Length: 166
Image 1: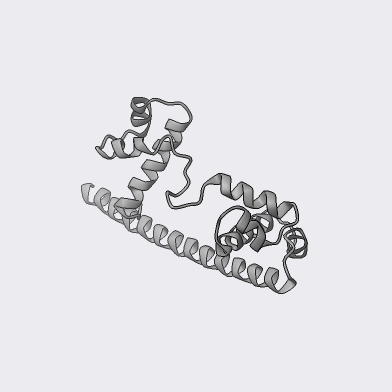
Image 2 (image 1 turned 60 degrees about the horizontal axis):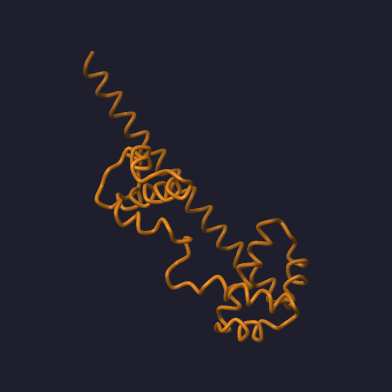
């Protein structure tokens, strides 16, 4: 009825369960608040103590080491070596920071200066960011359109059932 796949529904439930557990609710309280009981809860419980970082993601300490070196004036390559990560990881972190700053409405030019980026690189990352945002808006619009059509069909079916009872 919600117009999402069953596994997506489980992911929504898992995320809500983890949020409740991480804010201090017991397992039983979280399950009661969800109104959902499943053997999946045991595997969800194992994730409560984790910080939400992907298991293949580089440790937070290495990322802090990268930013410390970079903020002290090191080039991305040098900061990557200092953090013992690959060059591509350093650039990925730099691009993520660029996107975060742009999300906070910092201008492209200011982001470029702050992150010591060549103007061409800043422009390319901005173009990529805009394309991703456009795709996300289009997907959200399509999902809304589908949800409205599904709601319309459900309402038609419900009203048809009501009309049939008269």
